Image (cartoon, rainbow, N blue to C red; front, top):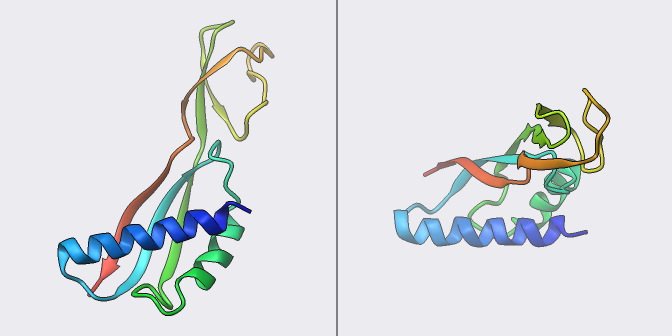
Length: 113
């Protein structure tokens, strides 16, 4: 369950930003998670609630925006949408796909005081 470690890293990033931007409380965090990032969003929500206890983000809301994966098919030259690794090209069935987007985990926005 690497989501726990991801949430711990998220709290560390929030604490570092709090020092740099002089805020003391995080009320909400918006994360962008790509479909190909191998992250279970429900596990992130669960672990975020645990990891933030006693921190500047305790009781903060976690909003997750899921982003589809995108890949370029080397067989037919089409850019396609992927929901997970291993999916074939929906146009030609090829598995020769070069991932373009969807592996990211990114903080999009934080609401602070």
